[in-house]
Length: 484
Image 1 (tube, rainbow, N blue to C red):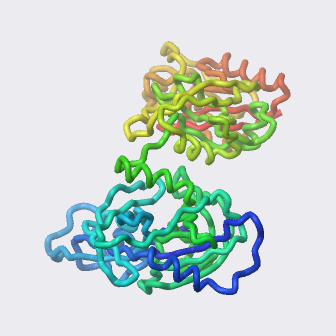
Image 2: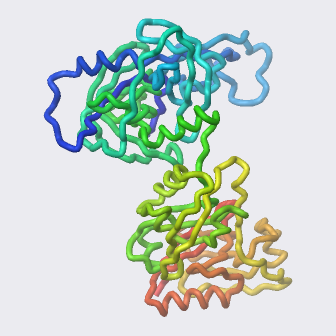
Image 3: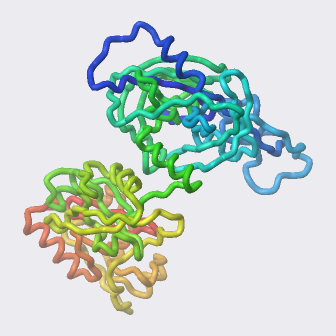
């Protein structure tokens, strides 16, 4: 099975040609390596862990890179006393680089995560104890600080946005604990989304990246850092020529926040989104699949205040076009807190413009509004009815259906009780117990309202309708082809 493996101990220095003009292959990299190597460091971490006898799965980070250094942890529950061993200190190696002569060092969060002691090892084997300034799990980055008796060598940041596929890269690192190893390659792809998180923006390279390289810098041919090595694609755990570095332009603002605040301050607008498919674009009369589809909004969030609703498509944010769904989280995150920005929406076949004030993302501000309408009065008796052309049979919500399908009192809509196995609705995963509360961007709570929305779509020559489906705690917008 294919897998993306986080480089739990990676030390690299990749170099990429960021020039706008193509260059011939360099005669050599020795001068560049000599200049950059002193600022590339090894990161050594240790922690106290409890070991046990016998088998089981190892849950300690980096075990697949250093299997001989780790023993098995319990899978859960209280471990029998006879299986326990004394707590022992375990160590692991990763990589990093110095960005300030005062001793600020960058590495991956997963390199130092759970460590109770962190050391930075310089090129001349000097060992310095490191203090954790801050870390960000969402982009897998950490900022360390060491105290040295002299100014430390540093590397400079480059502009990752101008890096091009085919540019040269060079790596200096600590693969398998072999410090000072140099590898070269090219940029294989840009802006990769490897499903590591909502802010994915990876540079793909074929420079050899192996166990021991995590947290190392990606350099261009000017000797500037354009990325931080974070992951590899590898069925075996070794290098197969597909490595990933988080882009410098994504990382730099995070590091500035960590240094200033000890945490990352990201913009937040209070929406959950999904991709706009060709079918969704057709159903809503949009010229092509683009933008970010709002599947639900957060109660009392900036989006609600700006009038953004579920099933709106965000086409432009603060003057930046949103062509793909994954672009919106990055654009919002990089927007200044408390800034009021223009937002262009697509709603009911028309473009609309609203103003929105960006707020700061916090862990406690994601209470989601599941329904924007007022719940319909609860009925005692209900009648089954088919939604014309959709292949589903529904009932209006009653006390009995709320109890049977555990539907919250605040939810309105129609409850699916039967799905035609041959319908597109069945193919898209609709099932009994799901609640439909919106069709074609219109909130519905009765069969009449639902069939009226479907009829309007047919009258408008649409053969696909967009349905908002609530299944348990999940909400999604589903394009359903209508039967003729």
